[in-house]
Length: 363
Image (cartoon, rainbow, N blue to C red; front, top):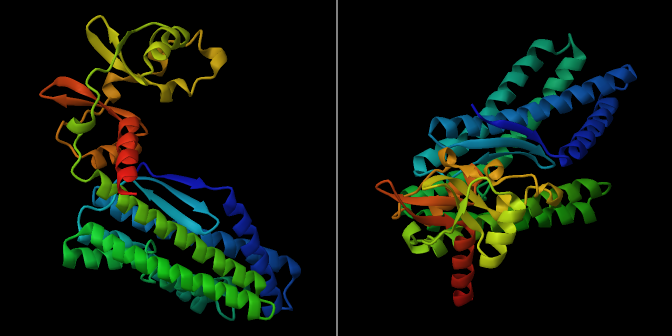
């Protein structure tokens, strides 16, 4: 379905920590086991836990895709997993379904392991012990994610409800992120208390504090996104587009392109033309991907964004939607077209310049 699975290097840290913790847990709970069983159970349980996390995020992703929202990737990292969903839901009902899918999946997984524990207890002690821990951790995962603090699933569900009542996405997000920040501060405080006053629980307290810090930064980032939306509200492609995008001939090398066109003009976006036909667009973003020693033998057509990949936008299209489109496609410029006629180009540079100007005025 076009969803890439990724593993962040920090995941290996938490995987080892959980594995060692499980080995210690099983060795205390079952001192009569063969020592090899501790490691088999620890490694197996840790891997199955992260499969559960992956299924939790995949549930979000599959519902999002079913509702027409693209999902780029699912990444496992030190705090669990995260699905990179390309854009926000356009209706509160859609957000509610996408957010609810993860905790529901964790609850179903917990029921599956509860059944496995019931079938194997007293017969297969390694399997039953593994299943018992996975029941607890998946229930904990479902309950924790239902805390009504954005960007946890519970916070997104809360936002969808407020959104449905108020009909104001930005207001709903502000309320949800405020509750998210308060929740994060409470978790950080809890972590400090556990680390300082809990006997032998310093590492547990530290881990709780780190989770709170992660939620706090995520909530603050969401607040910044709302500020971005409000700053760009009402701005159309026609207001920002560059109408005199310079033209360069096809076939020239990057060195010649920089010496004859970029440096004299100071521009960062050029139309690549073959006689009177548009072949593509090249920006400094594409040039910077090429090592300097290769500039002499690399031609513009080798790095340009070809015409067939240029997803054009209308002059009356919202800039925020255009920014989401560029982020989703991994491009920095889009042509503005009206009735088949090229009017100009809109790029990240123009959007960032507008943002900087407006934020300086409101500061």
